[in-house]
Image 1 (cartoon, helix red, strand yellow):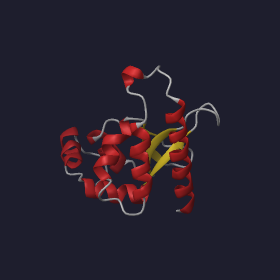
Image 2 (cartoon, helix red, strand yellow):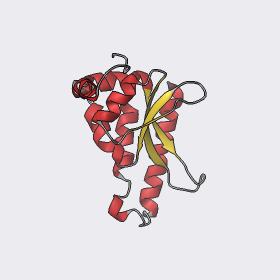
Image 3 (tube, helix red, strand yellow):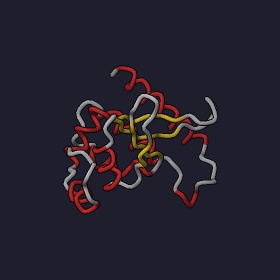
Image 4 (tube, helix red, strand yellow):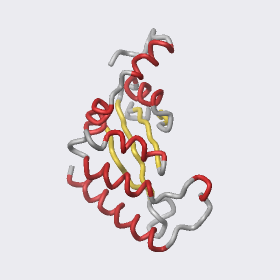
Length: 150
């Protein structure tokens, strides 16, 4: 990917349009992750996050232009930028790359499953059933186990 310096918005959008699911899957296999968030401690219901990171933000900016659910953050102290989406916002992206991901295929599949068990925005304040919470905890444990084997 080209450096962002000196490029106008039209050029950036043209580059973003050319991003394919296959390219995204390869980028994700190398620089992405499906993670589990446990805000509020062990007894809370875990959630799913999708994150991609790099020192050079060019590819991340292009991805966030095409997929606005990803918010660009950084650079952090180590100079790394990242984009992240969470919950139901992850489903469309994970569905897009699932047939092309190689190394992190199981994490993507579990991420889709967990994200689909997230409340919709209209039902955000409704409590999930104990059964759904337990399923999400099991999926979260499996994602963490798989991530620890990479």
